[in-house]
Length: 90
Image 1 (cartoon, rainbow, N blue to C red):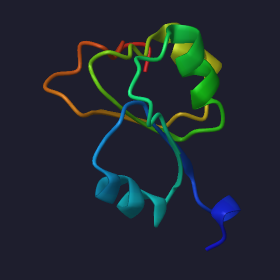
Image 2 (image 1 turned 135 degrees about the horizontal axis):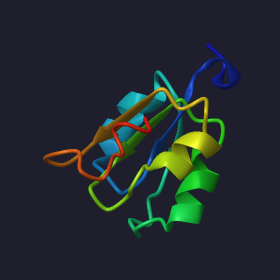
Image 3 (image 1 turned 30 degrees about the vertical axis):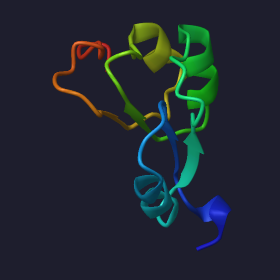
Image 4 (image 1 turned 90 degrees about the horizontal axis):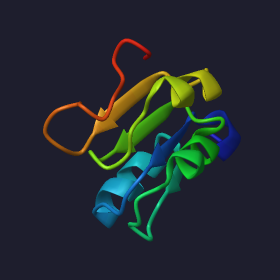
């Protein structure tokens, strides 16, 4: 499929390049290769139009982020736990 036909996701931190390339086969990928923690406003900005987010425990997806990104369908951590997700809001 063309790039526009793929669902868009955000990878919020630097991860193994082969994983990014694998995901690009299936998704339009916005990858934070700088590996800096995204501030809440930056996270919301980068999540616009995304259906998924692959995060670390450093990025909180709360009620404000969920409300600002209604198209977001899945959030996943590259970490143990999910305390950075506001589960009731999601």
